[in-house]
Image (cartoon, rainbow, N blue to C red; front, side):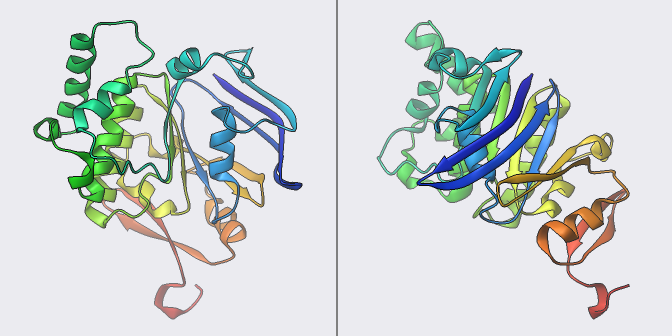
Length: 262
């Protein structure tokens, strides 16, 4: 579906992305994992056409993304930025309705679709509230409703659990898991692999792709069920990782259990 080949990006004379190659198939859940400053957000922004590549190519279903019309690109990909707060006192329904911009439809139909998206996030009662009155968790749910309303093929989520409390992180990753199991394609950046334990049912969890990124390059591309994932994580973050059994699945935690390396 999305093919990134030998992608290189320089900004201000500094190389930010270095020979990045990544293929994402329909129905994949790809977790782009890495420390702060690894280039994860920059890669998403480059895929979205917000940065002009220095070298390499980006293709969607075999067609070049470079120069693709914004309306067509919006049909393929929708984006949840890491810092997407709106400070204006805009009504929630207005924001989510605006996500329907790619459709040629009546205002009434756009609002109906937006309200349906808000209902799926249990936020319909907030439709007439203004964004500046919402908590961080409520604001994130509105942003997710906008993703649904845009109805793109693929979701690009940039550190979606950033600045959320544990409850809202849990609910968010449950929602991500639900979207994936319903057939949506997702590319999600994070620096906390522990959040993947919240994706819901352990069924299929081992198939979640985990792609490690460091210093602008991809250093591994594996799955959550890979027996060698602890070694990959330790090399990526320069800290030991150990496994914890949570229910019927394994969760990876940074640190040394019991104060010693086993």
